Image (cartoon, rainbow, N blue to C red; front, side, top):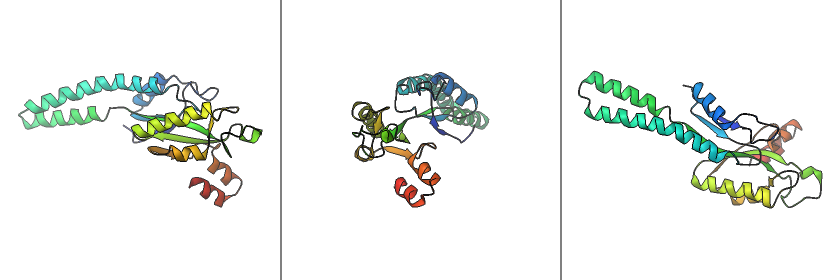
Length: 197
């Protein structure tokens, strides 16, 4: 088993940027000993339910195994039997897959309402991950607002709405299309520090 968790994964729901089916992503992760990944499709959360449901189906099989080993541990008497049950129980518990729900959003350079220049067409990339139920609800609000209020070439949010719905979210600088990376590429270290705040 590996301790690595990929926090920036695109599925076939990221048009022109991802081609993997969600089932394939999860199966490959499990096959390589990685029991957690974050689904962060570009500007949408179309695959989130499929991702969660697919991992829950697999997790239910593992939970059944965990229950079985716990029951055997309760009735085990010999030390060797107890140790075997504990080992098998720990091994099964380590195979519970943790789906991390997220999105790689586009952040308008000025405001999501500005649709006058191509400069704000795609905006900067930013990865948002839900760390709890509140974060998931806020992520849904942000992505929805991106489509209903900020759509201009693509669904966009801005820093104002991100601040409003930031509770329960983990923010990552994303890819080379992120604001921090762009500032660093321009040699603007102070601007990159400011963008990170």
